[in-house]
Image (cartoon, rainbow, N blue to C red):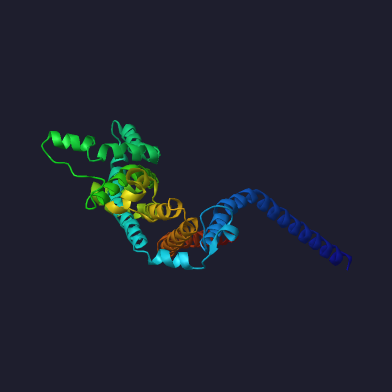
Length: 339
């Protein structure tokens, strides 16, 4: 009887120790994550809530909306959705999304394939491709606006060749293509670095086995590189979509808040600044900002649900298979040891 009581006491002590350890661990996790949570709440959650609140008022930005503004309910949000200029800006944003993907994706893969080979000067080319990505949008926008304006350097060169240069920035038939090329030049370095990192993570043994089987270079890229590069490509597509939907800097610097609309390159972000800050209607601008956030969040959630979850499901399946194989191997080892 005494032995049984001692066992019960021992189990009770172990249970208390285990509970205390879990509590301490939870407290440590909470303390370590508290700064990140505080920053997230202050700089993400709070601005979203305040933006939604401001959107219910006709407010000029002075004082607080409750005291100096006029409560209009959902009027700002409904006006934004019905405004033909916003609808046009939203269409331009989605055109930028599609155009950027179609231009950058194949070029990024081709550049990454090239830079994944060993040749002299490879490091220099990698640097040159990545440099535009790290240069400030202000510098890029100012430089290209000087080169591409009606009497800029590009048209001067064309005039010397006897060609009448177009208005690259103001012609609505050309301006969107100009913007897409500038975006591709600016951001393709990031895509190339991601693709190159994905390619270098592919085991070399797969290529060696393919060479033994007589596969050529392009056969190996089609059968090995592209399928294994797909997860990296899908992540880049996600980042590119979100970035394109929120594009503002280049358009605003090169075209300005008014020329962008007439040139056919206005985006949802430039519309927000033009109709909100520049017009002095901060309540309306806040409504536009919240709508942009909802659109971006919806696209992100749909993409994650139908595209990125494939990679997660595949990883979980492989993990389960690996655990099952280890379990079977352990059982076989125990069986052999028992014999």
